[in-house]
Image (tube, rainbow, N blue to C red; front, side, top):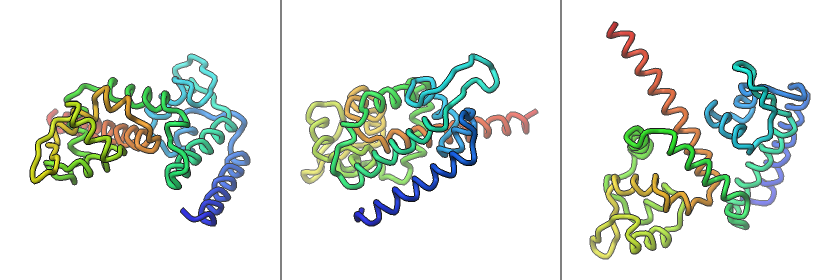
Length: 218
């Protein structure tokens, strides 16, 4: 990204945050937080309950969380900074908050049955070939291709060779994506945020689909 584009993007964020201050009160609700950040409700709840975004937990069933608008703005700036660093490749995202990233990802995959998670991954990566190269695997995981090769040599990823190329069948790729080895490798904030958002949307879509199906049967 060019410096001028970065400046324009920063100005847009500042302008957006100024509008938030004028539009919302000092404290906002979970639903307002979700809308402002354009994230799923499950992701918003995780950010609040794990202290990634500070809040007041009232313990009530309705309007449980009170989030200071300034803390929301600080979170937006933090995510934007990570995105800029990732784009310019000047700083590895691992220097920002790797522990939070790993906990976020682990919480996502541990909260859902493995069979459901595999189905989600099959849908998410349906555009990928049934057998991937190490470079294609690197692209969908955010890891370096050499890192993928290292995991193959260690036996963490099952692969076979064709004309000197390491080929990874999708089932083995998915097994690695939900493994502890992958969790310990995560340094991409955008991968985790994107994964959580898509997983939330997929679960919600499938939940509604099952409800509609059950209604038709009755």
